[in-house]
Image (tube, rainbow, N blue to C red; front, side, top):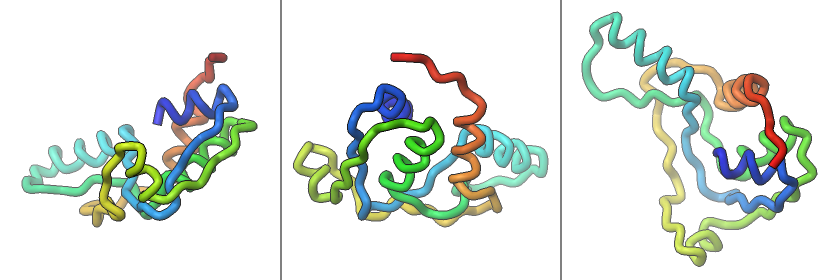
Length: 119
């Protein structure tokens, strides 16, 4: 996330996969949900993630739009990223164990809460 944000602020070209999906988690939301589980003495294994799946392309678009960047986003496939030595599953989506807000709303909140430095 930080590398993509810094690149977007600088106006660099971003590469983002369009055909690999995952679950995003905003740390503030994670901590809030974890605190509820502990307070209610709930034990076990939980997937604490923001709702809705997404891909890197959607994530990059949200960042570029939010910081009003002039960065161009190069859409790549997962097979293109594997050529660069990055091996990942096509789907890293988790089924959430708790109800949390959409990751796009969480990302917007986060981006509105930080100050952007000039790099």
